[in-house]
Amino acid sequence: MAPSKKISLSEEDLVLALKSRETIAIQALYDMYSGALLGVISRIVPQQEIAEDLLQETFVKIWNSAEQYDASKGRLFTWMMNIARNLAIDKVRSKDFRNTSKNQDIENNVDFIDAQSRVTFNADILGLKDLVTALKPEFKLVLDMVYFRGYTHVEAAEELDLPLGTVKTRIRMAIMELRKNFN
Image 1 (cartoon, rainbow, N blue to C red):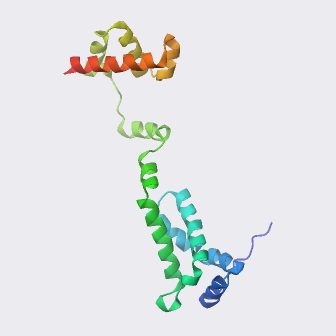
Image 2 (image 1 turned 180 degrees about the horizontal axis):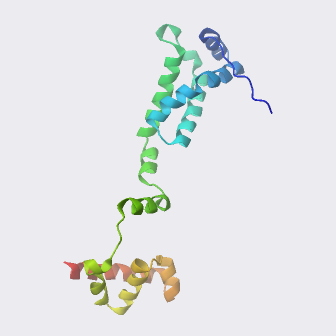
Image 3 (image 1 turned 180 degrees about the vertical axis):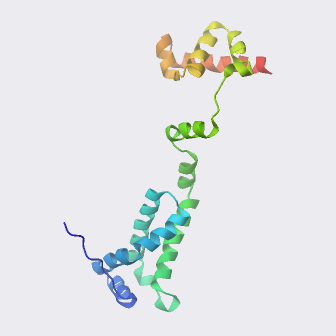
């Protein structure tokens, strides 16, 4: 399959094609301006996948609002760049984007954080093991499984043959006891 030839039109021809909604206009827009517009978007939204989605959204908006372009107010590229920039800024300011940025997938970050800080958890240094040993046996067992051996609440419940709610309650009660003893 041979690569297709890139389309290039003069700005006037491109504007006319856009306003008359000719498909060659969107192909020319992409060939001529996609790199520059993606660069503008990527400076604001560094995540590549989101930036590419915004580029597509930019082209759709350009296509749908081509009638609003006024050549007397500026060049076509400037108008398109402002559309791309505004969409990227809107995305960064959106609640969805902020929440996504805050809630990174923990699987991808735990190893990175551990490697960066080179911190190891040693419960003996804090005297935590001694405090846990002083707890009731049922509290001690659940805490040991969940916090020191890496069991999930569900896994601990299955292993101990207890209802999940009981495991969670015992963990909560154990933590409350530890707080009393730790202070």
